[in-house]
Amino acid sequence: MKIGNLELGNTPLFLAPMEDVTYKSFRWMCKKFGADVMYTEFVSSEALVRDIQKTREKMHLFEFDRPVAIQIYGHNIESMVRAAQVAEESQPDFIDINFGCPMKKIIRHGAGSAMLKDLPKMQQMAAEIVKAVNVPVTAKTRLGWTAGDTPILEAAERLQDAGIEALAIHGRTREQLYTGVADWSLIGEVKNHPNIRIPIIGNGDINSGEQAKRLLDETGVDGLMIGRGAIGRPWLFREVKHYLSTGEEFPQPTVAEVVDVLKEQMFMNLEWKDNERSGILMMRRHFAKYFPGLPNFRELKIALLRAETNDEVNKILVKIVEQYGEYRLDFNNSSLK
Image (cartoon, rainbow, N blue to C red; front, top):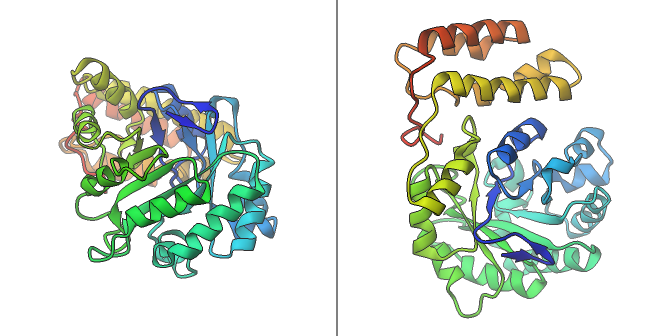
């Protein structure tokens, strides 16, 4: 697979852009375990145009990230063009346009998946951004707005005509948010349509190596994108690669092994953030996902989610290892919610 002149090999694995998730420490862990392509958290075009420092910090890239994209979102074409030019200054390998976020705070202004209700504007925005920058431009979107309104093929053709060099498709509509089951059949229809020449990346519900292989075989997509499944489980990329190459599931980790990974992510977060408390608070979403299915774990989990210092967290992790260290977790049956 290629994006512009960027060679990505066969069936590259992409870490999906996720707000308040795909920051430095999490990207590092996913890269360590086999993710091929990184994305930043998505970045507001209006905030970039206004030069908001917190937004600019989201675009801070590291050598371990590469290849990496900065994803931008917005509803105003002029602001999006300017934001793409500002993002290009951070020297990403490509720029991605968010046409898929379903959250109210994004769509109420006409951005994200709301663009699926105005395909001519989506095409015009993409075309203007492609003309304005010198790096490849890609896009991420959904199947449509509702179950009865899924114009993904037309959207893909329009984006291809606009100069987009790859398209990631999440197999849900905006109406679904993250409920129900991702529909990969429509992703496959886009990939295998004779008019589509750009690479198609499939996204939605990948939670095991076996599932990734089945979806790949059913659709023939060029790449696979993993999002929520990797939260609290960054080694999912390693599991998928192992299954694709051997046809066998990679052994699930023990609790002691999981704690070692969690500590590494937490240490990098604390090193990166300007104060200990904010570094710990950013980890809470990950803490909640790292230990699925442990019996009688509620009290320790609550304590972990309430901890505010590195010392508190480490004391709880010691207790977890003492009590569950050799317990082998089952992430394949864990919830993505």
